[in-house]
Length: 179
Image (spheres, rainbow, N blue to C red):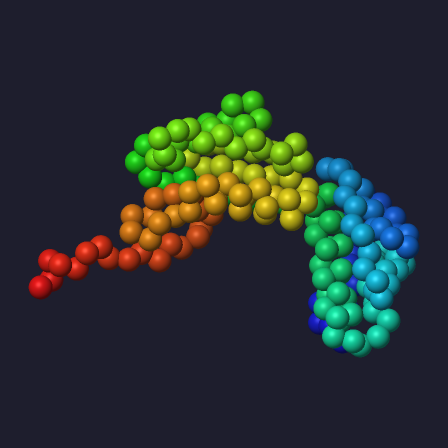
C-alpha cells in the first residue's frame, strides 16, 4: 500500500469539493481549481475527508495512487492558503521592476529582459526579491522556474537569479597564483 496514497485528506472549513467521473473540482476562499482524475484510481468523499484508493496493485496504478492524493491535497492547500516562491536577483547592476503586469529586468545583457507575468499568478518586487504567489502549486513553480532560467546563477561570483535559500556551490577562479 502506498504510504502517501492511503492517508485521508482532511477537508478544510470553507472548501467545497466536487468529485465526478472525470474531474475533481475544489473551490475555496481564494479561488477554484480543477484536476482530471486518473483511470483506475477511485476518489471518495465521506465524513469530511477524501479517501483515494486504487483498483489493483499494478506498478502504474500504485504510482498514480500517491500522485492523485498529493494533487488533491495541494489543491485544498492552494484554495485556502495559497503558494508562493521567492527569487533573489544577485549581481552588480542587476535590477528588477514591476511595470504593470510585466517584470522588467536588467540582467547584464545588452538589452532589458521583459517577462510577462501570467494572469493566474501574482508577482511582487521588493528591492531585488521577486515573490510569485498563486493558488496552483504547479503554476507558481513553473513561473518561478521560467524567471530563474532567464539568468541562472553562475558558480564563480554567484550572479544571477536564484531561489531564496538556495545554496550555490562556488568554484575558485584560476589557480595560477598557487604555482
